[in-house]
Length: 128
Image 1 (cartoon, rainbow, N blue to C red):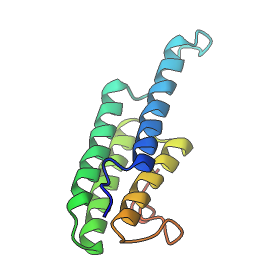
Image 2 (image 1 turned 30 degrees about the vertical axis):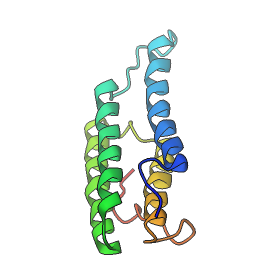
Image 3 (image 1 turned 90 degrees about the vertical axis):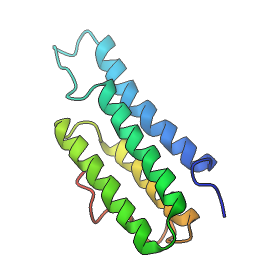
Image 4 (image 1 turned 60 degrees about the horizontal axis):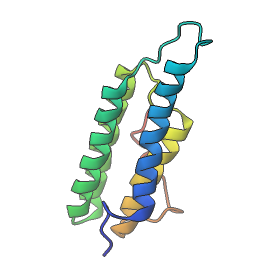
């Protein structure tokens, strides 16, 4: 069985997720024509989001069955929903939603609990 945390596809999606959130913050910091707009999230919020992603990946690695894995999906999607709400629903836009979907679905697939074509395991709980 593949090591989820070290899986290249997951590592790529995790990096893309983090980079996309940071790039938006850095772009807004450099953009003098943003009319004073400041994103409602900051680098600490990005760290929190990434900590949730890493915790999820470490825990799902140990999941013994689909039900246990789905409980982890629900727990961590709920945490991400709460963070998104705290951040004025701005931290997760379309690109980030896609990266999160890729991370969670690929982790489930590597555990043989679902396949990417099967379902979006985040959909039932995701509010972003």
